[in-house]
Length: 168
Length: 161
View 1 (tube, rainbow over the protein chains, first blue to last red):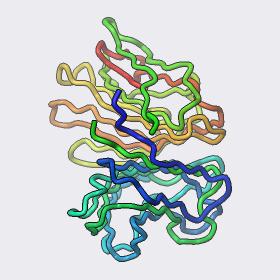
View 2: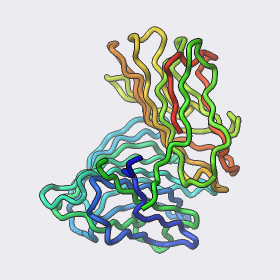
View 3: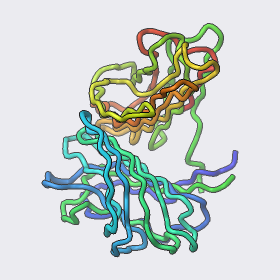
């Protein structure tokens, strides 16, 4: 069996942490898949998850959101953002927010990077969010931080796994 | 690097159909589970219900549903997790569903993500995205699926864990 779906790195929080970074990402795959299971470490009034590539804090991120709250379906756009926003992050005990992000052609030095996020949190919404990072740089690092950059961060038990997909 | 996407088992429904598709004795050695279902119902209910450890209790969800012309959201579907085409849909068509279960062996509640559709050649077709939660701290050792309204899975339906 050809090995086409490989775990590059995985991290599970044993203590609360404000951020997780995957660095030195190998450039040998065709696509990346980031799977995140998170819960807020406290009960902030606004909590979410932001993702940056190569530590870029410029206004180079955009997204189109379609979400369902259980009672309404909503779509909206965000452009010129300083990170890719996804999820709200549940605070209920033992409940984790599941996020899956597919990142295509991440090693290209010729195109902007597009990706597709699925975010599922029964305490908040189910959503699908395509995003764009306006950079021709190959993605060599991914940083996941709380939306508001507060120090409460991600709770113990939150897990982060980066997979690489290789053409068979 | 190790092989990280491993097929545990596949079930293919034979002639006569099947009331249940079940995976038992799931190894505890993985981090996440992914189930792919290709299914057709013998009746006119497209909903496929999931069971963990034979339990149909403590499931909740929020869902987006689109039929090709509008999109709505609902949160009252319990353990509905996948979609099948109907016996009255275009012949030889089967619904497609992907269910992702993270940290299935943990002592926390289990979060699921599901994408499903019953694509066919009719005027309308439903597709859905779902956030699901099984509010149970037990490790998942078995996963089963039953068709809505007590219909069966039609022949050639498949599920892979």
